[in-house]
Every structure is written in structure tokens, then in C-alpha cells.
Image 1: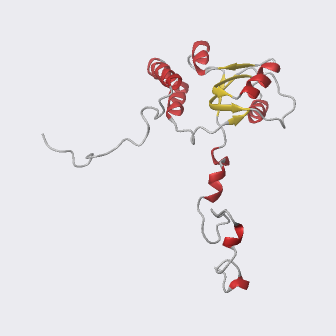
Image 2: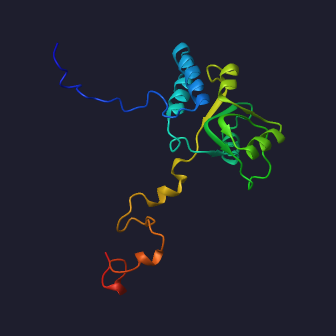
Image 3: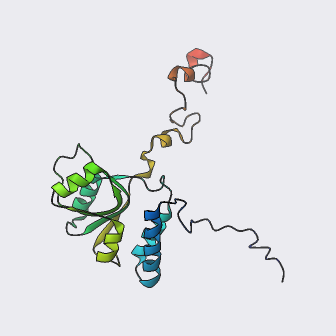
Length: 183
């Protein structure tokens, strides 16, 4: 038996399980692994893959964004699914009746949804109701809204925020003509 030179020490890039030890998340993974294997639905495979993701890759989504997407797609009777935290948006005044299934809800978001006559479901409740994901809209939050993203790709002529506590540290030589030279 020889060594496979081509596939030697090759790592699978995607996660095969979540890094988190959260027991609720691990039970959800067990459930959606079963559904992904036993149903022909691609929906369950997508949910499973998103359950594996890190928190940076599962950004929160607000009730206002959900309401806007539902209104835009014109599918008011469908269940919205988000493998993320659903947060409240106090700027959005009149929330319509929504059925939302998510990993978790903030207290105020759950209260707003239920006050509007909607329902806040967990992903295991969704699996019982719609095991194949029929009549659902799958949404996710904006990944690049994190504050850290403002600094990525820093360099001259990039218009990125410098990683400094004091802006005056960044206005000396090389930054403007009046201070010797400008890059």
C-alpha cells in the first residue's frame, strides 16, 4: 500500500460540525443532519451548513429587514427562516404579522413579533411543521456591517478607517502635502 501523493495531507475546507459546545445547537445539528440525509430537500442541507458556521458568519438580522424582504417578495403567508439572532429595530414603527423561525430572538424582538400577532418559532419547531422547508423564505443578516470590516484592506488610497485610538496620529508625514509629502 503506497502513499497517495496527490491527496496527501489534504484537509476538507468546510466545517463538518460546529465548534461550539452549546447543547441546544448540537441537538439542532443532530436533527438537521437526519433531515438532510432523509429528505430530498436542499433547504435542510443549507440550514445544516449554516448551523456549522461561526458567529461572524451568522450575523444578526433585524425585524425591519425581515419585514422589508417579506413586503418586497409579496409572500406574507410564508414562514421566514434565519439561522441567526433576530433583533428588534425601534425605528420600525408598525411591524406586520410575521411568522419567523430563528436560532434565537432578543427579548424585545420576540415581544414585538408576538404583539403584532405573529409567532417566533425555534428551528426544531420549524422542523416539525415544515420538514422540507416548503413555503419558507430563507434570509440572513448583512455580514459586512461589523465595525471591524471598516478597517480591512487598509493602505494608501483605500479610504479605509485606520486602527488608531487618536486620529491625530494619522495626519503627519505621508498623509498630506503640508507635512512634507503625500503618498
